[in-house]
Image (cartoon, rainbow, N blue to C red; front, side, top):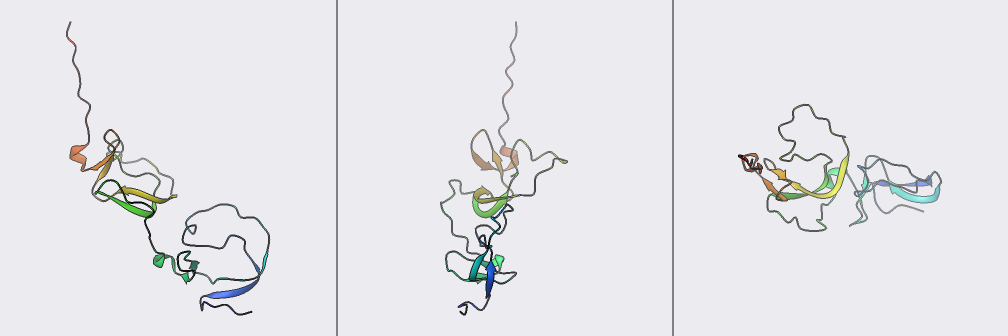
Length: 136
């Protein structure tokens, strides 16, 4: 048996969880068994599910599953787990897990997420709760 794609190779004992555009950023467990005599992408290629071809990860097609609601948002195949928001953009030393949030709309730079309005805004427009003074 020969493989069709020049970036594929025939594996006598292939993985049941081959790397693909939709999962190359995820870490996780995979069942430990062989898929016998299967064509799988050579390293460093991954499978592009939309074309069936082996591609480098930079060539994975970004096909938005949905349109982003806010014009200041962008669809990201691999967004940050800790997007900048009105509540955190001033913090200097906060830590974020370096994980990929898949297929998500997040604010374009220089916008941040305003939790109170559910929109991307410039930091000057971050909503500030008015202080109500009560006099006796």
